Image (cartoon, one colour):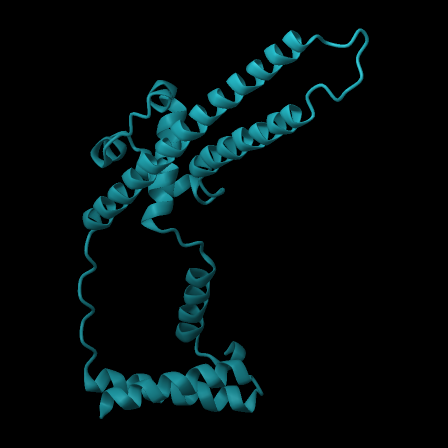
Length: 211
């Protein structure tokens, strides 16, 4: 009787601890990972931001694969878009700095005013292009976010409902109380405060149910 627990109680405790340690994923995590897997296999869909429906993800096995893949690490789908946005913004800032100090760097022969104007036009054109990319990526990010939320809601609805737990009879509650009392007593004798506290807490819950 390790830790003052009966074999059956020890097994239940180990199962509960195993469940607590197991990683838990939300519907959103699963949807994002499923989309990431889908776009990896359909890059043309990513290029045109053609986001699949939940049915397509389920039939293609992407939802099940996502649940399995999440054990290895979280989805990087949103991270890729945000990283691209940050890269564009940093490049814009760099070009602004170039514009600010345009013509200050000593050159020989020095550039003509016309050459400086052309350089300025080129840099401004580059900024306009990057701003267009930022706007496009921000819009894509918004569309993707809305679609993920919609797929998340659909996935939640599609989940099978858990059957109601059978009501524990008074006889069973009394039996559990006796087992917990024995566990509590043995834990106190073994100076196992964690097990004793846990057993006592469960005893209080059973007492409330018996009222």
